[in-house]
Length: 92
Image: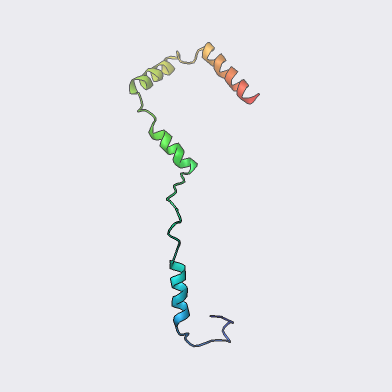
């Protein structure tokens, strides 16, 4: 069917044999084609999958660290030196 704009309006078009022949040709696919299912997981999905494998939060360890931070015993000079060295290695 060809459409040429509003000035060329045609009546209804009959559906006849050539249309059904094309439909049969389109439906017949070779039986030997081996197409399988495919699954692509996005990067965000992969990260979410890895997060599901992370163990549960250890409440006793969290409380221990909170107490050390509140008492001022968590941030020692040795820990700060290590953190500074790692930062300098990363940006250098």
